[in-house]
Length: 77
Image 1 (cartoon, rainbow, N blue to C red):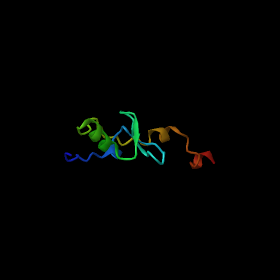
Image 2: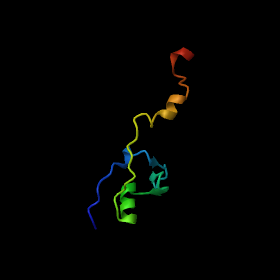
Image 3: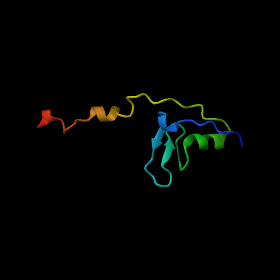
Image 4: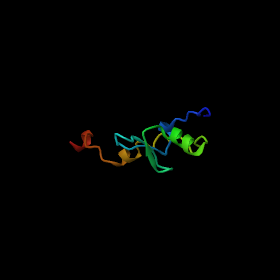
């Protein structure tokens, strides 16, 4: 088998944690869950390295959290 180019899936905007103990990793773009890192499954299935890697923007992770009200803020007490 060819050498697999290591792709940092956890930095990709399509990567997701599924919270399923059997298949904890997933790819929103290809719509699958897996026990292995998604780039490995893509390489095994297609024979090519994942070409859909898009680095997550810094604000993407906390964008939902920033919209929520922080009740630990002293202005509410």
